[in-house]
Length: 444
Image (cartoon, rainbow, N blue to C red; front, side, top):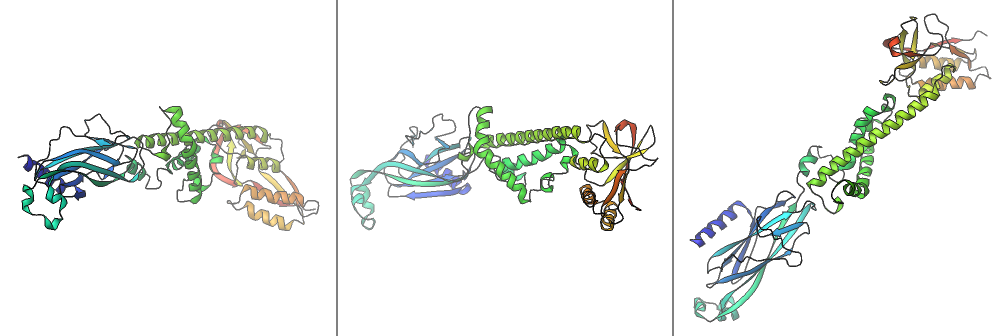
């Protein structure tokens, strides 16, 4: 009955799993069977060594030695066994297993589990099955061609030996494929930290930084274009910094011990790495936004005073982030007069600088600059900095009679007379933008 049950077990194993290996000699045949072809830090499994007695007498299995296996793998006889095979004595003993009768088989289980830090890739397990049995004296000394059924009646001699079988495992990290798959395979685990930090930094920057400075970011960063090589230069650099320095330091400070995923990692490392990357990226974005906001406020308090001439004031406006030459027109409620907002309209501002229209007068010999300037001021796409460069060139050409005659605030009853700080609640906003310059030629 026992032989029949073991035979059924062997047939089931061989039908349902891949055969990892088979070795045989005169006394014994050993099959290694297992569904465990992939191992991760949360999915252990069994390997079965099926030992069949080919002789006509009793067979004993002394021990099974685990000759080779990675240092992040633990080996036991079963999942219920608390004893793990030590690195010094790599043998498993099965005292509950009986002597194998002639023609019968016995199954020896080996339970394989991984630690929480593994090294992904292909790894080899090497099993050495040690046995002892009895063979006829004649068979022991004769060749296979000389053996006959009469050997069974010959005197018996003890024989010991071993058979070595190997099993290859594909070691992976639990959840790694699912998590990285959510990123459309854009990254590997090594590159994940920098990827997340750049993405989170860009997200937080859009919230924390002034609007004018948000627009100054390059498109690949502002829009997080992962196909851009510049994006990956930053991401890879941050990933290498995290791998070499940040992660070991952060785990030592905020967890139960120092970890280094360059020597192995598991699911907990993915979770911690993700969290640390989000925190570092978000914190960096907040700090950068705060520094820029502080710089902008400091610059703003020193920049526009209201008593500058138009050219100086516009030059300061460019420093404050105003890019366009066509500005938003508003109407002051109390006076009904109009003006142009000369700075970025941010949510945290209660009031804004508003300027009158600007009158530009060119000298009679400044035809070339005059013509260029008129083309620029009537093009809404012209940058304010470009216009100011033309006006600055006019200042330099003034002594030669080919430049600016004058630049001043236009005297027009429909506009305010000078630059003013106006509270947002005190003006009606007109969302249309207009050219802020009037252009004329001196008659002298």
